[in-house]
Length: 346
Length: 231
Image (cartoon, rainbow over all chains, first blue to last red; front, side, top):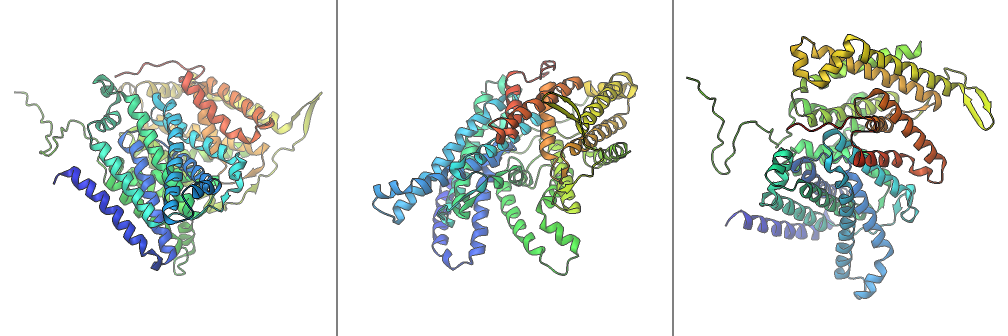
């Protein structure tokens, strides 16, 4: 049984497992349930950003914007237009609910994908700092535009969203995201992403259409972020444009950096770790035996995030599971890594 | 007075940060340094929130805000005049430092070709520290000038102006000081007009839209030189 089949079984297994767990999730404490759902959503977000940042090397700081678009489109469609769909499918039962949910999530993802296209095309000729700031700018533009749209509540936020998100949906979608990204990268076409990251000029020189890969990365990454946003909206039932700002983008970016840009396993692990850490910090700020200062630091998670970021860059820039690019090493898949031997001058 | 003290303090902070967070990463790819810079920026902002409290505070009135000129519908206040004059003075000082002093020449040399500069005997560490100190001092001055006109300050107030500063620099052409000034003026004028028009809530988005437009059509900026990419 080779790798491809293992992946398909793993995906199927994950979906079935999440369905089973979800079925019995009524017995779990609702707070823990919410945290686990957040973990699933963060995994999807982090893996989608990893495609853009880690595998294609385009440093995007505006991922929260895509999430916002997905969240708002999905929420709007499910609250305003669900009646028509329900009557067409014969009432509010489990089947029609599922169809509706998949529908709005896909719609949110597609809207976000369009935004990814709009963001990706101008970013083509930008590198490094410029790209980061432009994507940051796009994230902010999206947020300002949403804030000015009264139809979805504007600055007051959008409330009353139906709580369709369950463990099953969250982790199935996370599993699908991981499957798509990993399969894509491991394919022949997908190796193009990595070449764009490693050396763009060399990639162009051997005939890789870097434009197509960069735009594809943005569109795909945005799509999954949009779907995650839809999940998020239907879990918290209230969304507000200020919840999708630069801070949220940074949180996702930290997950990708901590996990190692370009390592899906690392990114998943980092997403779980950081979500749990965040929740744990909430408790720490209640510990009476810690000095006041530490408790207040724990309550302000951005200080911790920023320190983690700085420490990570100084001590281990490749993250937990990532690899630093090594000059001169030739990697033969499956074989031993060949080092460039120093030439002996007789 | 207050301005000089603040500028010196900011310069010191900038130099310390460069020593601790940026110098160890000098051999790393630029992305690492960018991420570190974001981390430092966040740390300063939220650390400030931690130390000073997140609620906005009132900036003391350093200069009595009086209306000076009345030319029909136009009114110029003292704060605006002071901001304008100080900016021009700082600009002249900066251009003088960069163009006419040896340290300025060293800065330009390091920017052009660090290896050759080091071979010529320039101490890269000193030059970089000095540059950071200079930039931080000017940012501190800008903070004071900004707060003169908008006396409500809070620890997170710098994020948006910081990004807009980047936009202004890119607009005018990276590496070009008068260009950055022109870029700043253009950005400020556009923002003010948008802020006074029917689309006033889109004011912040306009700055970024401007950036994206410039990067699409003239990535080197208005006064910048189109540089060929060396392989």
